[in-house]
Image (cartoon, rainbow, N blue to C red; front, side, top):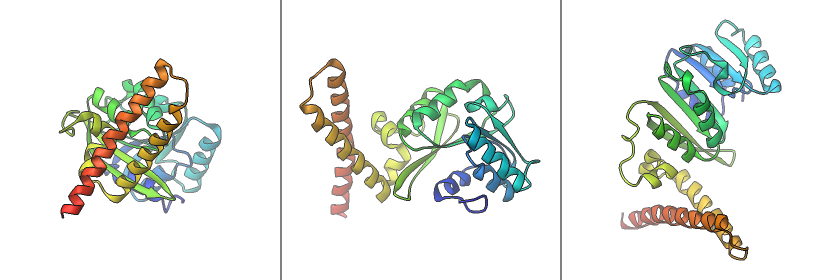
Length: 244
């Protein structure tokens, strides 16, 4: 991967950045995404934010090497600390856990007034992001699920709007699995949730022999509920496939 050719994951993130956007890429690492978008004339400018010194220096080096210092500013700071209010209208955050992405958005809420679009790619716990978006009046517009190098990723796109709109049926199920991904239920979706379900089943089995505390009972019941929920979705899909 480089500034000319992104990974499939980052190419999908790039696809959802609006034409002419003023972008902040948080946790930019090597600044591959903003460099790629700038070189393809898709954005007006970008801020590449990085909290760690090594990736910050890599991002700076790439921006200078590509001759993009007039289009991309590299800043060191934690989350949305690197932007000023009104400075950007699109934020991308990719390659972190969903809980961390949610906390970055929560801690930087005062910077989101001018932001029209969020493009978020959690490595785990997209549930945390859907919950945050819903509670903070962001409307989920689209979702994608993809597999690359043996890992499965979800990408969530949101804009300020009606947070209830995407959720039509059982919110608990849709928050966990994704309302748009649930409608499509492609093979990668089925693979991801089959693997997740089997992992939860192993954890529940391991807990059977452990001493029970209020905390372990609660955790076990939570996992059993998730297993039932995913089982229901996957078995319904199998039944539909058999009928067709």
